[in-house]
Length: 284
Image (cartoon, rainbow, N blue to C red; front, side, top):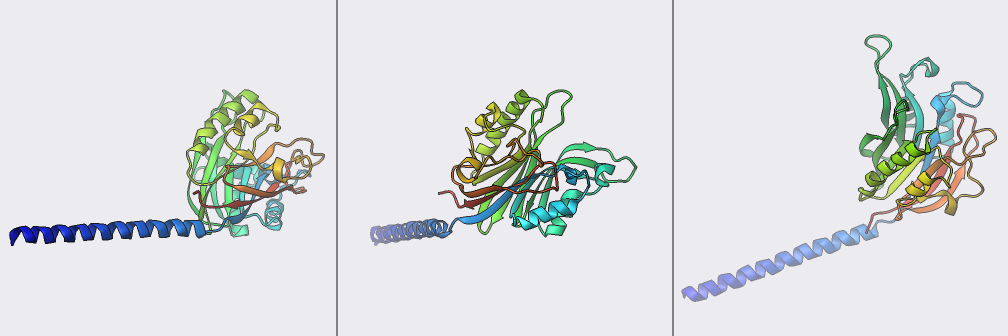
């Protein structure tokens, strides 16, 4: 009887193991099918150097910036040159929070310059970049980029955005304006940070370089410039009046599909905003 009992137990264990394998396989198949069933999500991304909301007419008007974003129906916006309690030039406003509240969007802010207040008890004086999003922001960080002595500190702001079930890594940056070698070092610092992410990637920014510059060619080793395949015309974004240079960009990872790109005329800043329509999906 004892050997028979062992045989029965062995058969029962084998049956349980087979059932477990079947359940795990079925669950994995279901999960994969669920991922495959999720369609690509349309998302409109914009990049806009707002020049602390000082327009070409030298007037400070943050409402004009909000109007550009609202009229353009952007879902996610990378903003550069954003003041946060910085100085009298922007009336010590928290521009990122003001725009987020006015537009009913989520916001994260990257303080690349962070100074003590002019008066005790006042908020810290900050200057940097921001990301606005109609979709939830799950996490974020700001990484300081290489800087030459005497130059402004620059950063790479990142936000993980949940676009109707699809997670997208959105990056925003503003590279050094007067030194190509420094910009190239900044790009080389950005590349591994972008490549390390598993989700689809979108990079917005004022890169302060034309498309044929070595630093833009270097960034194109990792990401794809959205304009050449989807934009019409020269894509010039600077200066806002009499534009003659394309220095504001949206770059994407290879698994993001670019549908259209357009530069919008505006007097809200010394730059023109760039809007890009994308399709993002789960990586297989």
